[in-house]
Image (cartoon, rainbow, N blue to C red; front, side, top):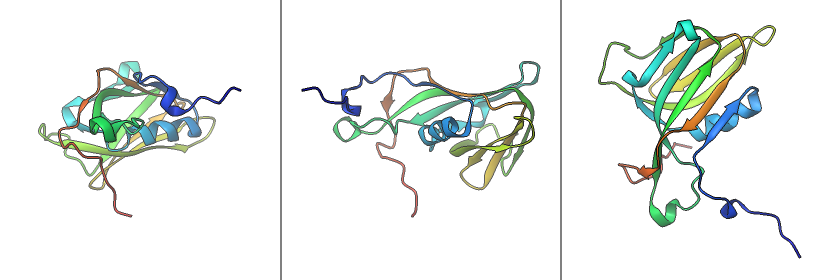
Length: 156
């Protein structure tokens, strides 16, 4: 008799995910929720039409955290085909500012265009006008014990 594989059967491997539609983006948003990053790790490259964040991502997918503690991992969140970037509620000139990502959503426009919205804690937001939805999330370091040693919590 054979059984279906379970999540626990999988190896712990670095994430390398792409999103080209709303369903895919919801997965990336869930995995990137509560990622923290200094404002200095946010880059827009207009000539390459790319916006990138180097974040400290909480490992929500880690089912063994009760055994070894809460972990984070450095990850690149990259949005491609970016035409314009706008922000509100953050001081882009404060080099010591640390931001916390709450969600990544897509507001569709006409003919595949739209806006990728990065909602931040504290009423901040980054809005990226995009020609098409093209978002990647890739782990770039090994996981490390979260400095707080706790799982992020949100009020109900």
